[in-house]
Image (cartoon, rainbow, N blue to C red):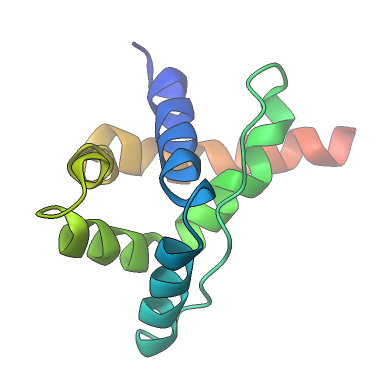
Length: 111
């Protein structure tokens, strides 16, 4: 799997993790507020369109530290948290998320 595939996997996995549980979202927002990070809602990425990666990627980057801490806290009690933590701590994914942003913003401006 290439880097774009890994980024899409992160975006999908995080959206799936939070989309079915208002309690998880609330705990994430509370944690982000404590960390003085704006706790953005995780958005769905539509895989048929590259430009759809812009907002989900931006929100993951804005709440990155809170996401890592939330997954670390949930790792013992929620199965998918370990997978998300592994994805978020993958060096290739971390660099890819940061490096893909200028390209996505450029594509957005062209649209």
